[in-house]
Length: 403
Ligand code: HEM
Image (tube, rainbow, N blue to C red):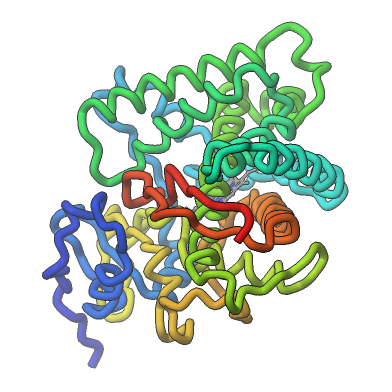
């Protein structure tokens, strides 16, 4: 006879402190130890930190992305519109329609052109880093932030003068995806969403926009039945947000993992060397830059003997899945040679990260260039973590360039 288990309830993990976990992995391991999927009363969501369950849910048509508008709606109006109309929060035919308009951005021939742009930008920024006369250099403001911001702005065709402002607004908008936000932080997210929506709306509707070059203007040229003007704006904001924060944090955290090992045993890979590709995948696995994504059960689901009701939310703890010992040997160890490495940092299934080829390209070229140019690079002091649980990265990574 088929027996359903009682709803397993998470115990012994205080999720109200998640924003302060400097090391979330013991907590994620504890969640995993309580079962493939457990219910959290605190967050009113099913949680999984298990690789097989996360992958299964991400690939299941019964669990979909479903944006629930935030209330009060007038305050969250821009935020709600930007999310509801972007590929990431769509499902079914609408998702396919919108995703199809975005995929040409990652076409091989286009990426080949972007590759030389990325390398030029890396070389320019590293020249500036090398010219600094201070004893230590903070890689976050000098290299990690400007690289992906300048690259995605060039890809989209955005003017240079507004880049810093857009990045600041993006950080504030994305902070709304943290599970814990103060009222002041919520207000800042609402205002930043409005600023981003206004900026992209003005740019997309300006006279002459149809002649401009850049991915944003390719979207503007789509027929309104394929992509409405509001969808052009929402998906441009998604590309900007997706193209910046996660790359900055994946590369930053990955460099910290690598440099924490000192120079001994560090690979000195060079451009075109496959060990760079392997090293970048380990960076993405070991410190997964976006720790949590959600789905909603589109119907009643029975999952590993647990009954999940239609409409209930499921949170995939990707950082936990990427440290699952059933899949990764010695998972807490940063192993620059780990291969194969079936991590879920880019998700799986219908919403698999559209920008993964660009993210990998930027990370591979940046890592190879840094190690080639500064083989003696070392951490100068303890790096400073940025606040939050969902978005995991650093505010400051001070290094010395020569040992
Ligand atoms: C290391 C860097 C990156 C990481 C870790 C990352 C991670 C992710 C993840 C986990 C998802 C899927 C979320 C889900 O399944 O619910 C996603 C979706 C997406 N990402 Fe990325 N991303 C990165 C870089 C980028 C870049 C560079 C771009 C754009 C240029 C981008 C654009 C997108 C878009 C448009 C989607 C939505 C795809 C869809 O819903 O069909 N991402 N990303």
